[in-house]
Amino acid sequence: MSTRFYHSWSPLAKVGFNLAVAAVAGFLFFFCLKKNYYVFALYEEGVYLLTEFIANSVKNILNLFGYHCYTFGKIITDSYGGGLILDRGCVGRTVLVVFSAFIIATPAEVKRKILYTLAGFVVIILLNILRLIMLILVAQYHPDWFDFTHEYLFKYILYAGVFGLWVLWVRKFRSSSSSF
Image (cartoon, rainbow, N blue to C red; front, side, top):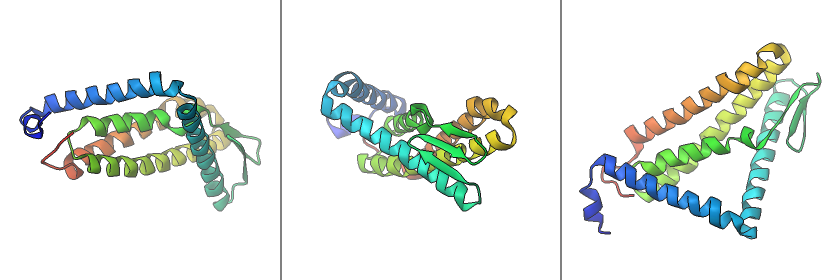
């Protein structure tokens, strides 16, 4: 496909095309490549390392502020007997995928997309660490609020942060002469 031809498309057509490319790539990964042992093992190791990094970051930040926390794999506990188990959804995999889809769907140079996606991953992981710290504090000081803050409040604040990153991308960082 000629780049000139792509540039003549309307912005909505470009977004549709980019979403189709992202859907095909996602289909290939989740239904074909993930069946490959080596790809699956790499994926699982990445999820494990991300979980361990987030758990240790939460523990270290809370310890820095005088809370005595410990980690045991994906479990974060405090000295009062409370804590969290970081399930696969708690590390923000879905949020990272949604953010990536937003960036992929927006017409821009591939290099800019990759750099902004990586920078966005760092911001989202930091927001998730902050979310988990707040959940531990809520569990300790207001346990009756835990379910609401876990299921709704902090989750939607995280998604609002992703949407804010996408708006920043659309307004400031994507190039005006975009390609997919």
